[in-house]
Length: 486
Image 1 (cartoon, rainbow, N blue to C red):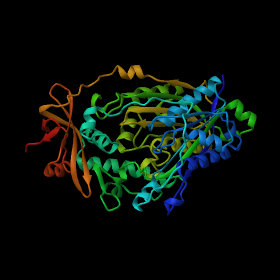
Image 2 (cartoon, rainbow, N blue to C red):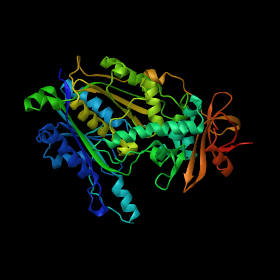
Image 3 (tube, one colour):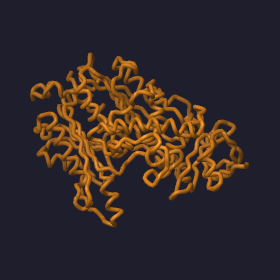
Image 4 (cartoon, rainbow, N blue to C red):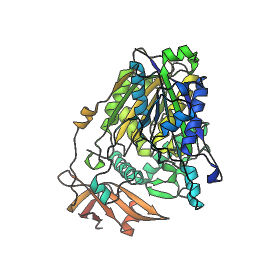
């Protein structure tokens, strides 16, 4: 049985003034892969990879791994791609570690990139940037495409992260019994801690530390997006970033003479997902899949939460961090990121976790014997992946768990699609258009315990929703419309 080891990491950021002069994602992937091979001290590793695995991004490449193989003179490697999902990087690392352990592959290369920054600049300039066509079908798709939105959610246009995560945040606020102002102050302080970490991360996109007051206060640079989140509490996908990881067997690393101080060991991993549709979750402020799968990863590694020296929790929005910390038993007063999070370090969509693993590896190399946990999250706090890492070799072979059956057996709430009658507000998000509120998306609980969705456009209600707690309030639903009576 082989021992899987992470031997090379590479991270790339691109800041350009003229979008026409920037590199496209496939070129940034090539750069990141070459940096990872240089980091390992073995540039030839790229040509020796038995599998090249690309995390799907916001581009139209059909088989980007093929273009990478051609760039590296590697004609024999298996090409692979994933579906969308912020969990996929850690899921692919988990699978790759198992395949290296079994001897199926000796060297595996994982990479991806996004160019949201240059795309945004091009749109503002009225330019169309042409990216190359990379056609063909990969040899392997890792992971399955799973729909994340219930048809009723789609009908009411409650389909984006900026819609769903704020609903969960307000539900969590009510669950904790916090006032609106108290809650905003607390999550702003949480995010200020993330910003402080980003200021010390040489790979972070935004390295000027923001105070809690700056983060929670609307301004021209921090516009309201969806109550209770201003821009500085949203993932920042306007970044040009790429990353790459090289895993191999320890036998291969030793044969190549890769420095032992470069080696970081995956100890354990786990994958699970909550009920696919938020409509069917038992509540909107917890995650059984995080609790069960994350707990299993720690258990297999022989660790308790307080044994972890470094943690990076997926950080698309504050609620994702709060739920994960609570389910894993982590102290929210302790640092919960090694990068600075997706607002400040950068949120290159599905590939963020590659940056968190790369940064974790850098830190573990400089702190021998320390241990770190990585979490990934796809969908709407739906798909979860975990990895435990250390610069110290594991005492037992890499272990992996997928306790999906245990999660699936947990309570499943029914959805009423077209309810007419009374209900109680469970969570809500107030969406902004320009400087003012435009629409509220509302999750409501019926007397029988079922869930229903509705929207509200009453200007006075929307304004009050940003200042007062509406969770727990009575509401009248008429199909997809919500009415409040003062």
